[in-house]
Length: 155
Image (cartoon, rainbow, N blue to C red):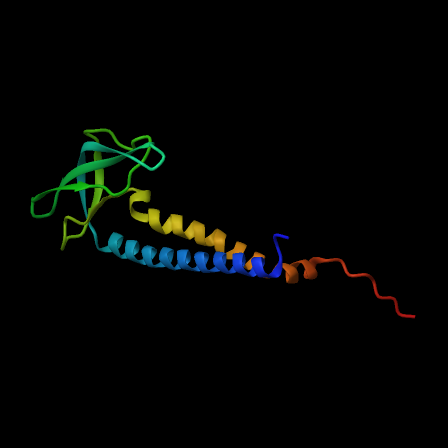
């Protein structure tokens, strides 16, 4: 049976571990992104081109390449690490940019997924895996708790 003690504990344990790791990554990534957003300088950038890359399923993902000028007037060209299908931008679009004033090559388009994507995805996965693992792990206790108990008659 699928929920035999051995396999149930193994599956539940794996889900608990995976969920915990994902939630830890989400938390650390959230803190990193929060710090970046609060310390970053703002600029306007321009989309130069869209790089096309095939993923493992042969779908085309579009990654923007943008340029912006920092506070000193130096121009920087950045290849975004977050892509999309369909393309989120067109060549020539003006985009808000967040960049580190100490290292302007560390820049991101100021869009939700570019800044908070890793935190969101790992948080959702962890938020599903951890409770699912706990349910699988404690299944017999949960079933016993909700099972109807026969009435006790005092004679």
